[in-house]
Each structure stands twice: as C-alpha cells, then as structure tokens.
Length: 283
Image: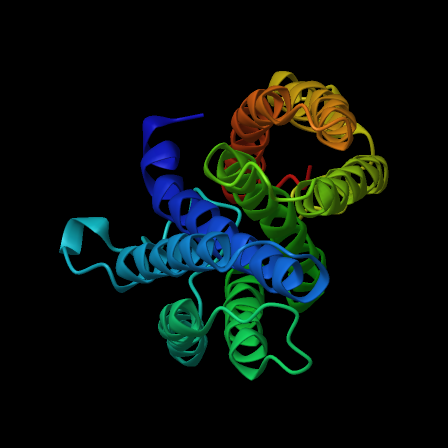
C-alpha cells in the first residue's frame, strides 16, 4: 500500500471509528436506561462521552483546516460523496451530538417513552447511512457498507459503554450485577454477528474490489486473518469470559477482560475501516 493511499484513507478511517464509537455507545446507554437499573450517573457520563465522540467526528468531517479535508483520492476504493449527502451526514452528526448532550441532563431510567434517545439514535444512524450511500462506489455497494458501519458501531461503541459500566461498580458496589451482565451479553451478540458477517463478506466477495475467498489469500490476507482471529474470535472469548465473571460478581476481573476486549475490538474496527477504504474489502 502506497504512502499516498494511506494518507488519503486516514481521514475516512478516523471518521468511521469516531462515529462508530459515538453512535454505538449511545445505543447502549438507551438500552441500559430502558432495560436495566444502571445508575443515572453512568447513563449521563456515557451519554456525554458518546456525544463528545460524535462532535469529534463532526469536527473531522467539517475539516476546519484545509489539510484535514476528506480527500478525493483515485487510489481509494470509495468515492467522494455528493454535496447533499455530505450535508446530510454532517447534519446527522450535529443532531446526534446536540441531542446527546441534552440527554445528559435527562438520562431517564426505565423510561416508557424516550424521545430524546430515539432522536439522537436516528440521527446517528442516519449519519452512518448517509456515509455509506455517499462513499460506496455504487448503490449496490452501499447496502453492505451500511450494515458494516452499523455492526462496527454496535461492537466498538458497545465495548466502550460496557467497559465504562465495569468501572462504575468501583464507586457503586451495591449496584446489582444485572446491568453489566445484560450489556456484556448484548456485546457478545454484536461481536458474534460481526463474525458471521465476516464469513459472509469473505466467502461471497461482497466488497467493491473483492472476489469470493480472495481476501483470505491476497495481498491483505495478513490483516484479514488478524481481523478474524484477534478482533472477532478472541474478542468473543474475552466477552464470554467477562459475562461469566460479571454473573459471579467478580467485577474487577470482568473489567480487566473488557479492557483487553476494547483494545481488540478497536484494532479490528480500525482494520476493517482501513481495508474497505483502501482495498475495497469487507471483513
């Protein structure tokens, strides 16, 4: 991979990672508020982190400095988005970040109706969808890319939100094991779905520059196998162990496992984004 390709791909990879972390973490906040007895302190702090990540993604997208602008690179597998899709993507991030900050003040527990959460999640998902439609080389390629961005958000943002919750037990020892067990179980499902999609993407050759099976043996095969072994299979094992230790109320052990899991999932998120942008591979 040339230095030019790496330089052109970095802004897109940066955007995908920040947006996935923010939108995914906020989704777990909304689910934790609805389904568990997680404390309002946790809900507020994690919502603030998610909104901040969304704001950082928006700042990167707006490219206030000319040298940080998302480039139109012929060396990349993606294309420059149409101006209206650029505007839609940025508007979605702006609404997501602002609604998330307002949510911090409310942070309802067990809400019957959660309009703020729904608005913020819809805006965040809309930004990811606009990115997929705008950057995918063809309309047909935009659907798998949209799915990929959503599952990256579920795994990366979920890993962050679950790790933060693990830390919360250090200051709230009387909190039941239910919230951490529930979020960890959701995270386990998210990573398992990623693993199933990996098999689908690689065997069918779903990416724009990808043919069936070739990503497992081609020039990027090392990174593809690392994606499978480290950020999917290893992450599944770590998350399952964290779930088991959380159910046993060994919260320090669970948090330690979730730390390692976050590192593995983040590495995989960066790798998956980079492989799509630079090599047209879905993994």
